[in-house]
Image 1 (cartoon, rainbow, N blue to C red):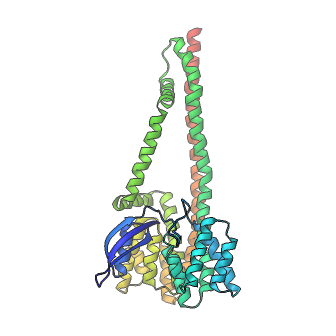
Image 2: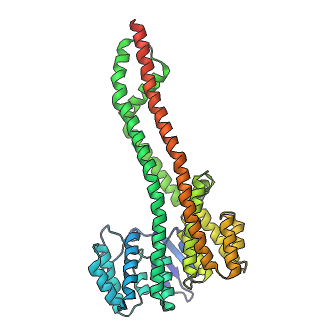
Length: 406
């Protein structure tokens, strides 16, 4: 998520400035309108969500990570069971933290709480640190007098989310290493090995086979124009990054990703697992279904599925329920949707959503293994063909030179 600065007008006509975290400008505008405000300006914050101290300073280039928030949540949930006052718990966390940004954050929260603010209000004042989902969970816990339960559920939620992210990241390590080794091996052959033979071929005076000419030309291009290749890669990456900042362009790319075989299936299952667990956790803590959907759609990284939830929310307002609109989008698996329908019919929607999340967490792990099972031999075969092709082109040229000498 990114941090956005906004300027809006309240119904009485007063101007209101502030900051809000979200996936895009459109999401921020929609949320402001849902709050009854009229947006005038919404711009991405240059601070990138850095936490500001009460003194006006800021953590220079230091940000509170999701892992930091998860550790803090687990620690405060544990201390809450001991029956200590909130400000005392925060004071203990200050002494326990090994990170300076986290210590400053805890100090700010403690001072706000001692000043009479609730924990959710103190957290909301720390712009860009706590997500809207997190803050709504804390508010629900405070309102229901079950903050300890909510913090425990938040801890479990964040642990499961981290496990899911780590599964995907760990699965990508080996292919990334393999691709890196492949590129490095080909570069060494083209930059250092091929030139050793090219001089010998030139001295022979014999016309070289076409494959050898191609390999030598590729080696010359890498040696003399590597900087241009780097510029091209950087340029393509910059262009793609800009494209992903444009809502219409990002929507097209996200739709293409969903249509890809294997990759699209993996992305869809990741989003369904995130959607189900977040929605189930929210409504299980007293957040209304409509408000929970508004929060959940901002947690999804795929804008196509996020837009689908916008349509679902519109139909939910008309009293059509959750399951049927989800099915009509065509973006969510039928198994997940039918389980949601069963949850609605039996009054156990929260339990069913968590069950769907568990199912698709396992599905993601299976999909990752399947993707890796296909990717590894493809990468190895591709590397073998490229390196074998380079070696064979050199051997063919050497044989032709030897034939000439004889």
